[in-house]
Each structure stands twice: as structure tokens, then as C-alpha cells.
Length: 319
Image (tube, rainbow, N blue to C red):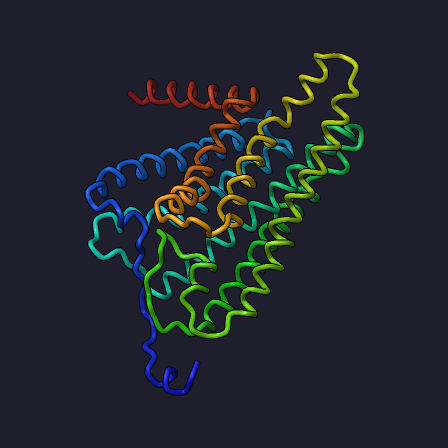
């Protein structure tokens, strides 16, 4: 940037979201759809958390990780949808500069933590299938707490790094974001200062927080499937696979959506398609996780039915 441009730059104090701007007449419908999705996501994940807390049968490492994943998904979806819902009723869909940085912080924290947490859950399933006799030792309470805490720390360190670097960017217009949320790559496009450091850190983080957990999870499941195929009885193989089917489905959905969201090319860019892909990753995926575990896992279904019966009985007594 030249000295003349430096002197004539205007500080960006707010950003304008262009997401959904192609369909002004559908704002009311969008509000209704995303409200239902948000309420379903929060309710579904809260049910999972409540069921795993109340049911003694679910007081195991796998469901301890699951309850943390549900809490994470509530935080993840709450980072973006409330702002989006408010903006559906505003002609000028804006977010403040501080609000944008806050959204980036929480979004990156949740996304990074979920990557590492899914890898920790894959390790849990690996130990359960491949080393069942050592499972109580290898997956003790201390180990589980360490893995969950480590997941959150990885997400936080990664997020703080990106947010601090984003705060150092010089933004002098335009202030329009072709999206419905704030994210690091979108902010880099608006910068009129050198972004090489931010981009380098982004690539390193993508490899360590994104790619490494994905590869670890993939290798874990290769070993798990190999161990399952060596089980002599068909019933034994079915039972072993059922214990990790839900997690494997969630992993495929999450990492598949993340890869499509961040690693697609810009050839043939279309705002509607870009929004649709991000909606699936940021909005639909957190809603799908409790549904997948509820439909695929007998123990979770049993705990949810028991919880529903107890709530119904409590209401009858109160009435």
C-alpha cells in the first residue's frame, strides 16, 4: 500500500453480509426454515446430553465423548444462526467489526475442537475393538478428561492465533462479505495489507487441526475394520461394527462437508451454491449428529425412550 492510500483509507467498523441477498422475497421463509433447524439442533443435542447424564448405562467413555460433541454442536450452531435470523428482518444485513472477530473466534474454536474430538472418539473405538482387555486402563476417566480437554485446548489455541492475526489486518474497504458469516478466508479477501503470514498460519492449521485428525481417524477405522473382519461369527462382526457405525457416519459427514466447504476451487463461483455448501457444513451437520446417534445406536434410543417416559410420567403427576 502506498503512503497516499494509507492516508486516504477508511477504517472498517462494520461488515455487510451478502448471503441470501439474491432472494429478497424469501427472507420470511428462510427465517422459518432456519428457526426450525436451530431449535431442532439445540433440542436434539440437549436430549443427548441429558440422556447421557441421567442413564447409568451411558456412563462410558464413548458417551462421555458424545455428550461433549453435543455441547460443542450447540455452541457451533449458536455462533452463526442467531445473527443470521436477526439479519433476515434487516434491510442492511450487518455485523460490527468486533462482532465479526468474535464470530470468527467461536467458529474456529468449535470447528477445530470438533476435528480433534472426532479423532479422540475414533481412538476410543479403536481401543474398544482392537484392545478390549486393555480398554478400562487405556480409556480411564483421566485419559478421557485429558482427551476432551486437549481437544478444546487445540481448538482454542488455533482460534486465538487466527483471531489475533485477523485483528492486525488493515481493512480499508470494501466491507461486503459474500456470505452469511465471518470466516478467516473471507476476511483475508477484504484486507489491503500483507496477508502472507495469515495464509501461512492458515495452511499450517489446516494440516495440523484439519488434515491430521482426519488421517488419524481414517487409519483408526482401517485397523478397526480389519479387526472386525477377523471376527469368526457374523453376529460378532455385526455387534462390533454397530458400536462404531454412528461415529463413522458422523465422521464421514463432518470431514466430507468440511473438505467440500474449504477445499473446493473457485472456478465457476456462484453465491447461491457457496451459501448452500456452507449451510450444510455449519448448520445442517450439527443438527444431523444427534439424529444419527439416535437412529443408529440402540443404547441411546433406549435412554431417550426412558427419558421421554419419565418426563411424561412427571407431567401426569404434576397435573
